[in-house]
Image 1 (cartoon, protein in one colour):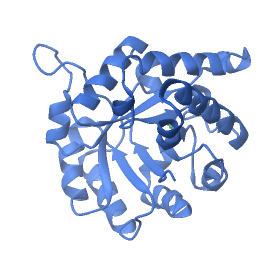
Image 2: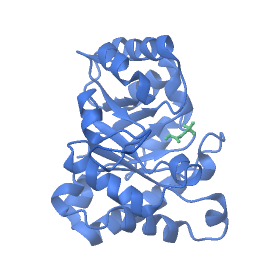
Image 3: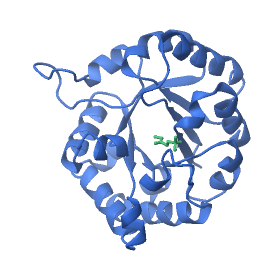
Length: 251
Ligand code: 13P
């Protein structure tokens, strides 16, 4: 049985005091939740203060990105070792805003996934189609290609560190949520592809999150789908009461 996994992607939001208050509020609200894995992914500059606010809580820490080189002349980038050093367990990789705003390619994402696993981080590997892909009927093709390219060369043992996050780009920050049926259809396709690549046992164990305007009011229906194992939450993860409500719905 896959344990549900909910992660909050704070994106480029909060400030120093707000990040700590949000983390401390979640630590308190979620102190009795142990049936759901929870993580928050603050901006890099607040990782250390959020880590302190989460110490002794059951909320884990993640980053929103990572670079694949170990160290050196890569101005502005952050390594896996640096993230481990700030208590990060997870790293979001290949978020649609990284792909479509910052120009990250499947090849870069593949290197990041590989570096994260070698460096002891658990990748949250994001995939998802654009509105034009969905309207053109190529959703499955686009997402399958992102999965295959992103996981190229990742062996069966390593892939077990990965959580896949299906985030249809047209549903991110727009208030448009994929219907539970639309989410399930793509999640089932992804699990089928993972089965082809890694076999049934591993594919059944990998968690697939949905992301895109997930909020307290649609959490139960999304999570009721057999292949939706969790949520990657943007806007609704910025309020203690909303994010905690979603987790308690699932717990
Ligand atoms: P929203 O929940 O704000 O739509 O963002 C989803 C997302 O991109 C999480 O990574």
